[in-house]
Picture (cartoon, rainbow, N blue to C red):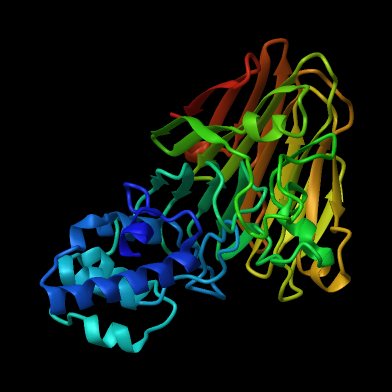
Length: 419
């Protein structure tokens, strides 16, 4: 059983069911490892990458002002880690960062935490600077830091897994203490409930093509894996920004065989801050329309979404998200709710940025500008030419210019910071 569970972890220590499921899986593992060490003299510690598991736990933190222990909730993940497993890793390996996580980021303590805690080990937090965590799962998270007000942008690329959703290339964005682009919280596990569609692509901050998402089973597999896969095909970090591109073509072609390529590129501009999404689709000659969906978190009845033309605003108590749709095709913003029971639909409103026309190789550019409550967004200028688009964001020392060349399945982007 121990070997079987260890094999579920990737080489870098990640666990594909999400952080809340990883917590109790690792708790059972470390209890078994300690029992065998005490009674059989077996040392199984190095059979799993525990320092990498701490990377995984740190990578999925998403602290907000109202919930300092919130996590990136891909799939059915809901809550985060308790302090017991981090303290076990810290005490066994002298891992000061695991000690920091147990003290600063864990949601609660248990009797096991008391047993394993090593009070002589001083905690050391991760560096307070922009970082990108890219897991063997092809989950990727960029952050400016670990505080509640820091910017965090997470994407769910990668392959199928247990407790997954139809969420390939979906994004989560947090800034200024608020989750401003959300992954709806804990959809039902049973396909017999009306809110099952929350598990489909339509229930995520992802791309719809002619109103359709990518492949997902109809519930006959319960919460088991689908056949949908995506992968990170390009990524990098530069002065002031990070970027990546994820190819979800295999997932969408299972439903839309006339689609030949589906990619989403993400540019995270730390200083402004701003996030630019590039959704590019190519087909066999069949024109298609695109919808980039963005969910808000309204579980506290404090989220408001308004739309005007090609823009929408999503307002939370501490921050506002200004979103603009651009590209070679006209774009319209439209607020909406899922056709599910009202109590669940009200908790998870969304806004679509949709192309008004169909095309055989459409490009949809989404510019997300989060600001603290009551603050004006950074300036946005857009010009287009035959070969692509030019975006200028901000002014002065924080100004960034993106030249987007719309050629091929992944647009080429040249980024220049102001001198």
